[in-house]
Amino acid sequence: MKIGVVILERSEESQGGAGDPMIQLPSSRMTINGIFGVMTIRDDDKSKQQLIKELNELRVRAKELEASQSRHSRDEEIVQIFRSSTPIGLFIVQDGKFKFVNENFRSVTAGSPDELLDTPSMNIVLPEDREMVRENAIKMLKGERTEPYKYRIMTKEGQVRWLLEGLASIEYRGKRAVLGHTMDVTERELAQEKLEEAYEKERKTRQELEAEVQRRVEFTRALVHELKTPLTPIMSSGELLVSGLKEEPWLSVAKNIHRGAANLNRRIDELLDIARGEIGMLRLRAGRVNILRMLRQVGDEMAIVALSNGQILKAELPDSLPAVWGDEDRLRQVALNLLINATKFTPEGGTITLCARQKNGNIIVEVQDTGRGIPEEEQKQLFQPYHRQMDDLEHLSGLGLGLALCKNLVELHGGKIWVESEPGKGSRFSFSVPPAPAEQEAEPEQVSIAEVKKQ
Image 1 (cartoon, one colour):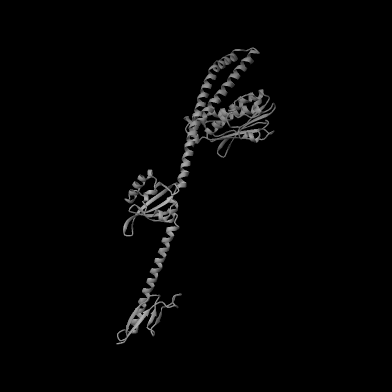
Image 2: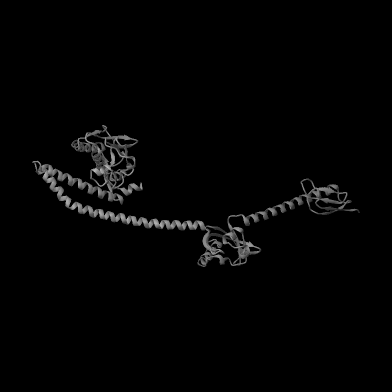
């Protein structure tokens, strides 16, 4: 019986490329993808077909081994990348000591791998945080906690840093161990601390401002009381004198006294309303208002004042306007204030025009004069409390509260107020209020400025 031997090895030609393995039967040596093998051929009981079959099986096995080696190489490469390139810090703790740390964890703790390995993991944790870390770690490993927890560490340079940490139980080298993943959140914690400090500072400042506003309101109330107490008998006496006197010059004197007292009383009311508006206590007694009728009444009242000043007041009002939902007395106050201002700044012989119309679903009321106009830089401050135009200083009347109060009242009605003016061309003051909804009931209700601001 003849016995042949086949030896398998990688030939020089097959190492560099793909292709079928080289079979060298004559020399009794063969190479299949780098796998060495020896096959005994019994030429008396093995056919050529059986030999080819076994060679094909060997070829498949060789490819499987080659693929396994490739996967193993890739796994090692992935592990190496995971060690050095991941932005997450990784470590393995076994028996309370570090057994593995990746580059990110090492850089955060500012220690070398040799310094960390086989050292107690709690050494880097601040003493005051260790108990908390231990409790949270046990809960997470037991499945009682899923959210990562924060704690502080002390680096090699003595710097305190914040870590966000999560844990998982694993088997490492045949024993139970803990795999930890951490993230450096120091910058976020520092930003949070600054934010909390800023919030606390803002809270204290707000409380101080609120206390200051409250003190001012209390002072204003006391001032109003002190002014109104002596003013009330003056107004009553002036009204009595006007109704009782018939002869001049005493009748004119009595009218001047009554007019001055009424003017002072109106200024005091404005001062009190402004103080109420600043703390959200200014209220409306709202109901359906026939704004067209109200504007005609105000126009008739102010026409007499304009005539006495040598001015012309024209009321260019439409035949009808939708009703609005608001406080009629307060809307009258706004319109009256705008007309009074127009009479103050319109020269003798000038014209004041009261207009109203519906536009874009709102009722627009306008008061236009032919006065000297207002510079653009002053227009931005007109509706601020205690601001007075430079021209107004000549009249020495008012506290600069009228337009600020008008703004509060209009906004309380859900509207807006604005001015359009050019020096030498007069001014147009306008305000808008929404119409009353059709289903709105006629029963009056109270609305505060605080409620309007919330909306």
